[in-house]
Length: 330
Ligand code: SF4
Image (tube, rainbow, N blue to C red; front, side, top):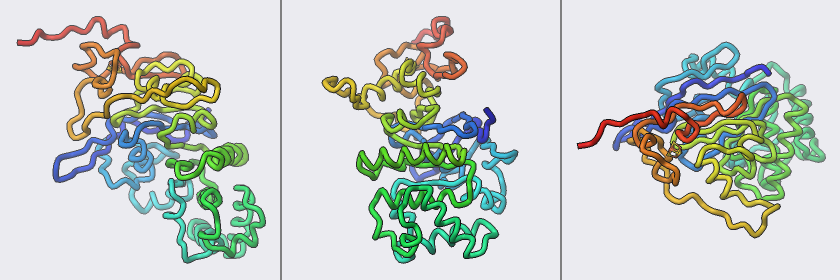
């Protein structure tokens, strides 16, 4: 399958008075045409910074790396060129639709403005597209709904409107950052179903950012697990759920509720991620890992290819770990 977006060795830092926060530290992944790639991790792992960097909306500095899309490197593309891509070829949905919708303007005007801004369509053509999009996202009675204001919609309906807005320019990539976190469980499931339906109908590629592996089980084709600014494991859904290799991924899976094993207690991962002002030179998960070895303290693990669909950064999977020798201390 054709690759639509490729992130190579991305590094993003935030200079602060107290020092530089290295939020993203050498991230690599590809997004294939028509797939959903989930980026999963705890807050502060760099998943949102990574997704915002793709649109160059991050307030951090992209210090190194490339973001390849349609023959352009988005990391270095002039702002004027980037503006043409942002919102039309690549579009983004945020967690809380209320902060992205203007409460004083009708849904119809907001949708139509979005369309006329990014395309050469007239107002009446834009209205047609707006109606089509509301219908696509499952909003009944779209011509009446166009005249209403955001507060007249429920949280789930507002998220549907945001999804409609993100689709008006027929993007090839959709980035959704925690799109269901603010919603209750039933509505969450409906929104995730909606993503699947839209993908089937439009062929859009989706990057889904979430802290919740449970959300991912329903929709993701592939999953990238991020920890302390790095992708520590990446693989297709079956591999990640049934053959997780990284102790952190296993920990995340143990903390996901399962319907089939009701009595099983959920086990949170003890400890906290490392300080990203001065990240450890070895494996950043070491302080929380019950299988850590001496080599983990000295070197960041090299990427091991478990198979064609599965890669992991952990010394446990690397034969070479046994051969590493250390200078004796003192
Ligand atoms: Fe644990 Fe070592 Fe693997 Fe890191 S590299 S996850 S410390 S075993």
